[in-house]
Structures are given as C-alpha cells and as structure tokens.
Amino acid sequence: TRSDPKEFWYSLVFPNLDLDGFKTGIPDRQENKLYQDYVSAVEAAVGSVHAAGVAHLDLYPSNVFHRVRNGSVEVKIIDWDGAHLIGESFCGQHLRINSGTVITAAHDTFYIDALKKRGTEDIWKRLEVGNSKAEMDTAFFELLEMED
Image (spheres, rainbow, N blue to C red):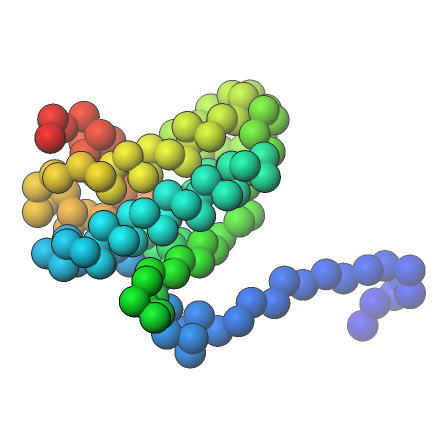
C-alpha cells in the first residue's frame, strides 16, 4: 500500500519472449545464413535505437533475443536500465565506460563489430549465455583485435 495517494508507481510490462518463440544467445555460427541474418537484424535494431538518440550500453548475448518468423530473423533487445542518451555524460560504473565519458553510438557498435569477426571456438564459448560480463567483455575485445 502507498501512504501518499499522490505517489505514482510505474512498472514496465513485457510480453513473454519465450512463449513468443524468442531465444537468447548467439545463433550457431555453423548455420551461416541464420547467423548472418541475426547479425543484420541486431545491426538494424541498434541502428534504430541510435537514430532515436539512445545508446543501450549493455549489449550481450543474454540481452538480445531472436526468432525466425516467415523466413526472417526478428530481434528484441532487453535490459535497458543502463541506457543513456547519446551525447550525455555517463554517470555510472561499467567495465568499458568511465564515469564522465560522453556517450556515443560506438559504445554499442563494438558488439556488432565483434559479431562480424571469425574468432576462435574458445572465444565463442566464452560468449555463451551464463558466462560473466567480465568474461564476455574480454572475449569481445579479443575478437575485435583479431585479423579476419
């Protein structure tokens, strides 16, 4: 119960993504078309968010759900509690971003750039859902530093 009737409580309600056929995690890279379609769908979704002036700042495999519907890959991005406006000064703690850093679209695009790299099986195993964010961050940076 609320003691002050003027106090507002807000909640975000999302559809059940599992029931809607969405899966979390990066699709198997051996399924080349599905994997490439996934990367393209993530890139388009993140581009739309950036066009609206927002950076997600917490893109990881566990925060990107995907499904195939009518032959195309659809994605839903979750976990928006760390999102900032592009151009805003970052005010928090993050493994990749120092407090006071001005937010740019590049803070999200490293996820997409890493997905486009070939990498090794060891690196890709560290990107599986359930691993720590520190481990995933390290793996993403290793992918970015690799030559194709």
